[in-house]
Image (cartoon, rainbow, N blue to C red; front, side, top):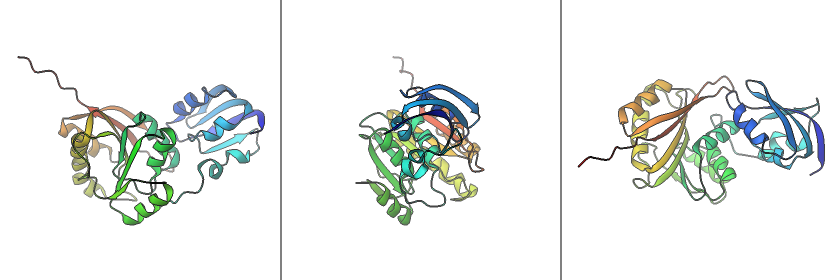
Length: 257
């Protein structure tokens, strides 16, 4: 790719600027990286754009007031089948990074929809073993078009079709009760989902769950007792203010004899 030089301002979702900064500082052609607002990062670029093109953590870019076609949204992400409630592409990248997926791990999205989060995981860790589950057959149809050789199953997040302790990572955008589901429905759904996570997660497993129904999720985790929230990240985009919760197992103390 041709070399460029200039001042770039990259826009990401509010709450993800630190992740974008971390990736930019690892790029050969990028220097003088700094955060200029809650969701914007400025940097100087002098060199090839290859690494910047591959970075999926920003949604738009301004370059000395001019557009760089190679950095356009469609050029970087390509055409994707979407539904109105599909996960924001940059948000999916944030969730994937919080999940800390390692090569060869089994990653499950129990509300996979059109497969946005699974695509993000595959982009970052190509050797991860992916499984998408959703109750909506139309969403699964679209996910199959987005993912090559997908492992997709029609099913319920409350009754995952996987064995006990067999899943390394669960990454999901839960129904908020706005575009999908309802707050009333979530009162039963969230506790059932957390119970399933406790059943299927491996000993060193981790779950990353995004929701705006925050009290319900925290209450469900506290009641289950086998899992705990170890990290929270508030995100803001398109009028939504969900929090990404990172869950791990509670370490059991060895029984004294």
